Length: 356
Image (spheres, rainbow, N blue to C red):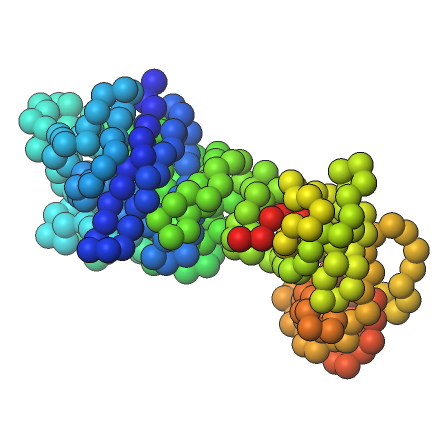
């Protein structure tokens, strides 16, 4: 039962905290995604787990054993690199066998392990080929097979899909998840692509400036972010700065530059608090009239329109505030630029967070 624990790990580069007292627990068999923008510390965290970066403070533990000072080659960890890092002069079979040979496994053990790894990634017929004879997706599968062939306690995936085209990325998401579940291995994946994290992770850790801002399931983070950074980074959301002017029964009235928003949920501000009102773009409706109901309603002007196949994204202006609405595509209902409309959403779809 492999469990990874990061206990207030810290890594500084001169005066910059690449990792700032990060604590995290990854359960046995879980796939945890470290998600965040470039420079947030996610790759440095992965490298610290692998032993490629020494820490200034804190500890890394696997099943309670402190491996902080252990060199990388002594950590029972499999790694899939962004660049695949396959040996070009070795066949697929030799690449997969490499880690096993370094561990001095017998020839029969190596043959069995290589065959099983190739079966898992569905590449049983390419063992004799060289890496340059494979497609990008096949090379990625070989890299995954090599990482799991040694039966590691922990699997680390460093931006594993970034070098693949869009269609292949979708296929490999499912493939990596299938293999990880079939092997039952604990895994950590680093990515800056929120769609990868949302579709693959059991849980996500969203990072910013060397710190973990929120850890939860993909659905919980998407629907109920607890921090303005997370709200703006995950999915597409409208962020309206404002101030709470009244609270009643857990609902609030918030004054914003676009007017007062009534009947919105409060998490956890009180009267007078500076807040950010968060509403996902898919929850915003546009109509010719304000309509009725308790939810917020703002007069807007359509300034831009983007056709994205199943949806049309409208960028609208309401006073000093920009409102974005992602609506299902209906060719007979496209709004022209300059159209005046009313933007609205249900009260339960608006979340109020304390401003940073």
